[in-house]
Length: 101
Image (tube, rainbow, N blue to C red):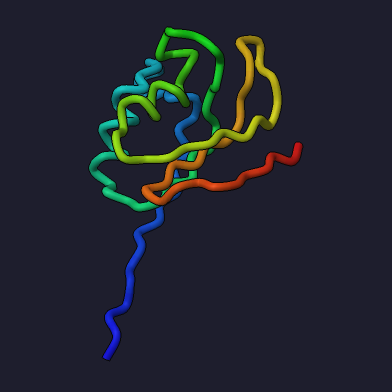
């Protein structure tokens, strides 16, 4: 009998990495994602600003701090800081993606 492959998928609305304490903390989001131990994660409401500040370059911060994931970001709109939208993290290679606004 063949072994069934299992994949764990999660979705997470990070609200621009702002917690209920109103603080923007991408490091907390990364910690939660690690605990999820998911193979693919769909993230909503994330900033993808070209910045070295984790509070603005949230997508890149998560990608750099979550080893083993491929990632892509889809811009939904521009906020006053820059690109804002959705992110996908995958333990499997992301070979193609297309963003439709």
